[in-house]
Amino acid sequence: MPSISVWIRPVLLIAATLVAFVGASGCSSDGAPPRYAPAADTTSWTSTGAPVIERLETLDFAVMDSAFAALPRLPLTRHTRTDIFTPDDSLRGRLRQTWAHRPDAAPELLDEERSGTVPDRDLWGLAPRADASALPQNVVRDAYPDTPSFLEARNQPAYHYGIRRDTLDSQIPVDRIEVVARDTDDGRNVPIPYARVDLLPGTSTVVSTYLVRAERALLYSEDSVFHIALQARPDGTWLPRDLRFRTRLTVPLREAESVQVATTLIPD
Image (cartoon, rainbow, N blue to C red; front, side):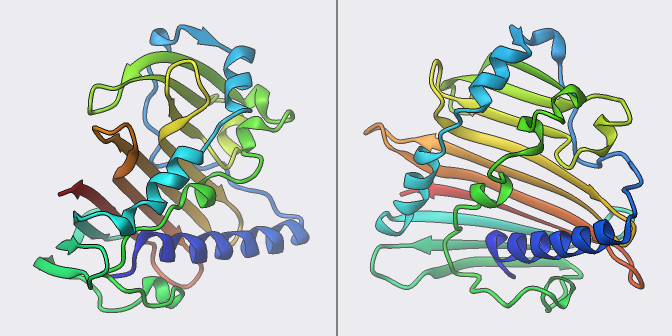
């Protein structure tokens, strides 16, 4: 099956093309609610509004970049699960694979398990085939445009912004920022209805993120989730640990399709 990064770029390219077409034709989005935005506990926020926006404006993804760049130099085990869903979001098929990666050696498939129906084809026939043995690529730049909608001044009234202390799964403390679209006409039409960013305390260093996209137009709708979480090594460096990408795309003349790829990396 294709890797996460191979799917993301074609899906976003298709979305951008359709947005341009719809914009040129003068049509607007239908405001259907996002599928994958989680509920946020706003009562736990310790700070809201402008101070949170200021932190968001200085997000630093350098640690994520270096974490992915280090993967080819390290021995590790990669577990990947690909889920294929029906139009009503029931599970249609699943593919599990376990790969061993060693520096300067070809990846080794240790285990593979299929259940249900897993199509042996590209996603919607639109993405090129990818090498299932390849290490995951850094997709954070695909998830976050240069200026996310929640940082555009004209969109800020459509959002709630909050921050609180939390921990990663490894019990590392973080400053957790949440951006939640308001339940208003403007909030129901923003392309990023929810974003969560975990920063090392008192810094702008991003070590985990969860971002939801909800694009609505006359000719298509897209709902996607991007999740990337790093893990700290004993020597203080960071590596990717959990990655998840899910997308559901509906276009004319064919039923909606939805795919999720979840990857866990374990250093040896």
